[in-house]
Length: 233
Image (cartoon, rainbow, N blue to C red; front, side):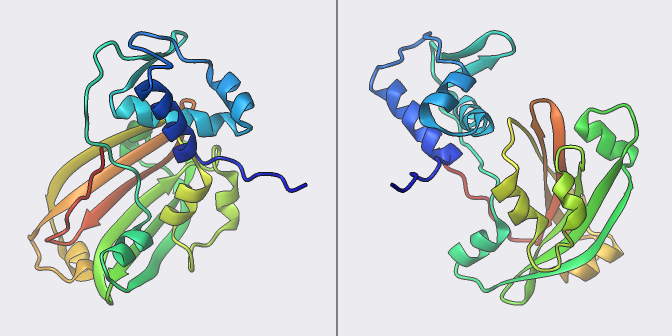
């Protein structure tokens, strides 16, 4: 007898979402514990946590430390942003994907990175700088720091073929995501890499993720002029 494949976090999210929409869980009802759902669905607890975080981000449930998860009494509708795999994003838009690793090294994280991770104590982390291409043209410049304590496998990966973005999406589910958008003016180095004029206004998407309070990765994705964000609900 073959073992059925394990559910993805999206599968778990959709099941719970359907249970809420059909009234199995009504406004204000407490949902089962993450561990109980994981046991019932034969999946990892981190998978359930990722699904619950998405439902929380979309406004259907509210999660409180030591208070469990409840269906919101007044559900709100929010736009949600899944972390995209850049390769897939380029291909879905009809482009031919390319990738170039600029640098990979291990170093003590600078103060700005520690602040993003909400850490006080310096620690070594892996920095990966890479350029994603669409039709042989620069698409996104990625400057990423990864915490080896939560991703020890990272020290054995060189990221010359597969991007850190794609590896992390597939292998490191998160329970918390902080997201920021802001603009910068391209300095000489960034302008050269993105083939855009010095001083051009560029949008930066900054994402930081954690698993149960432990930092996973923080990344600044610097986009070429004209980049558009796609959202789902």
